[in-house]
Image (cartoon, rainbow, N blue to C red; front, side, top):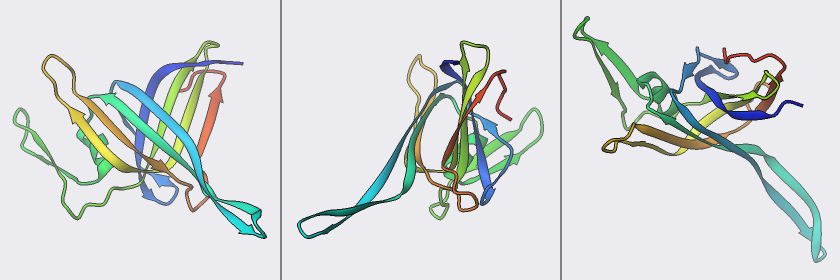
Length: 173
């Protein structure tokens, strides 16, 4: 059985419609892609005891950390707009976030290599940043970006996440 090792690649893709995604954008120098499944439960109590327990559906809490970030990737995470102006050698890209811009849904896919020559993919569908997006510029250090949020089931097929194990390594499309 192949054993996943390290983090080789992370890409995110904006959701254009439920279950449909735009082209993937790479997160440069991915450092952390962590996730944990959780579910809230309700208890029906009666006669001084628990009669039934019912889950409200699984959700995945996730966290990403990367060294640097493109404006295209940043826009996928938090919304906003990018405007390109000028011509070479005086091109300029400006990212703007308005108070009215909602945080969009997107897909995250991460890939680890395995000791058998294959790889292991984790795909989270319908993600949304529901926490802080952090960027840190420090003297003598690279720019580090962090984001966290939740992934819930897509309404088209109810997929929250998938694990995909490839016998032969396959890059994220």
